[in-house]
Length: 69
Image 1 (cartoon, rainbow, N blue to C red):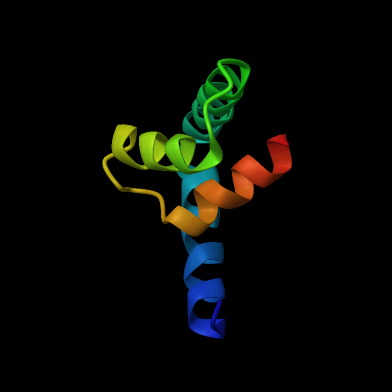
Image 2: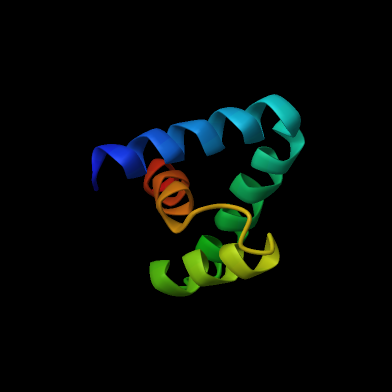
């Protein structure tokens, strides 16, 4: 990941956390539910990305998923 991508990811994360802490919690909950159903990581990332209208970069979703493993 390039420096520019890291900066953008941090900005997105900060904006999301600042504006919608509940949304982040919703994403964690969705990931937990999908993992309990034994859904593979790639499908989880794709589903979350679609469910949140591509608002979150894939790298952020992957970071959340990694924290939940």
